[in-house]
Image (cartoon, rainbow, N blue to C red; front, side):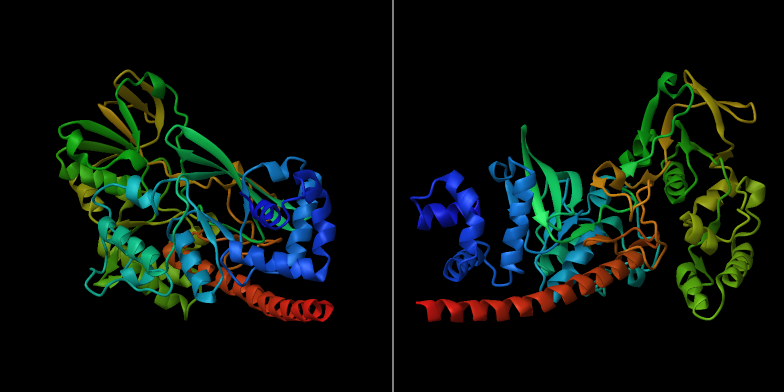
Length: 480
C-alpha cells in the first residue's frame, strides 16, 4: 500500500479514493494537516531527512496531472539518488554517498554485484594495473593481496566493500527507461523486476539519477560475411572461461586488444593452436618496465612532462624491453598510446606473455577477414585457414542509449559528450560514473565528485527543511 493510501485510509477512513486524490493538495496546505501528514510520511519512509516535503508533494501532483494512471501503478519516491548499475562504479558512488549521509537506491539487472567480473570474464584474469590504482574510495585492498589481484580476489574485495558500506542493490531489476520530467523536476525510472517467470513493472521517482552501467555493458558482435555458415563453435570472449575445452583445436581469435591477447595466451597454455586476427594498428606495452609498473611510470612522468613527450619516452622504453613488434604483424599507430587513449578511448595492450608466444610462432598473427565458409576462413591476403572454433574478442559498448531518454549530456555512442574531467555531471540532477576511459581510478574520481555535489545540496536543503518543520510545529501549536 502506497504511503498516501496508508495515511488517509488509516487516519481519514471516511474519505473515498477519488476525494483523496482531488482534495489532497489543498488539504496539505493547512499547517496542522501538513505537520501530521509530514510526520506520518517520514515515519513510513524511516527517515527524518526527506527533502522539502511540501515541494515534493506539489511535484507529485504535477506528475499525476500529466499521467492519469500514475497513482494506480506501483511506484516509489526515492529519498535520494537512484544509481543504475552495481558494478565497481555504482558501488564506489554508493559508498561515497553513504559517507555524505545521503540515502540511495542501487538498481542491478543481474542477481549479483559486479556481474561483468563474476559472469563474463575468463578464469585466468588478473588486474592489469597495480592494486593501488584499482582500489575504490574509502577502502584499500587487503595488505596481503598481491600487487596484481586475481579475478577471485577482486570479486571478494568488491563483496567486502558492499558489505562494509551497507550497500544492498535491488537485484534482477532491469531499467527499461529513464527520463527527466521538466514539469515536476523529477527523474522517472521505469524498471522490470524478474522473479522466476513473474514479470513486474515498477517506477522510481527521484531527484538525482546516477548512470553507472559503465563502458562495457553490452558485447560487440561484428557482422562478418559467411560467419553464420561457418558451422563450428562461435563464442564471444565474455563467454570464454578457459582454454581447456579447446585443447588440440585450431582456434581463430578475432581481436588483438587485452582480451584477445590474453585469450590467445591461455589457449596456448592449454595446447590449442590460436590464430589472432589483427585488423588495425595496436600499441603493445610491457606491463612493467625495469621492474616498475608501466602505468605508474607514465603517471609519474605526466606530472612533469607534456603527454606527447611522455608518449615518445614510453615508446623508446617499450622498444628496449620488447624490441620491434611490427615485424611480427603488430603495427603501431601513428599516435602515441596515451594520446590515443585520451582522444579515441583505445586502450594499449599490456603484455603479460602473449608477445613471447607470438615471437615463437605459437600464436599465429593474421590480417583481417574476408569471409567465412564451412570450417574455414579466408583472409584479406587471400590465404585460407582451416579452423575448428571462433572466439570474438571484439569488445564491448555502452548500453545507455537503449534506455536513457536524454540527448544533451550523452552522445549516441553512450558516452558523455564532455571530455574528462568534466564528463561526470549533466543537467537536471543527471550524473555519469565510470565513463572516463580511465579504468577504476577514473570511476573512483567520478564517484567522489558526484557524492560531494549531491551531498552539498542534500545538507543545505536538509538544514532548511529542519527550520521549516520547526516553524510549522510552532504554527500548529499556536492554532491549537
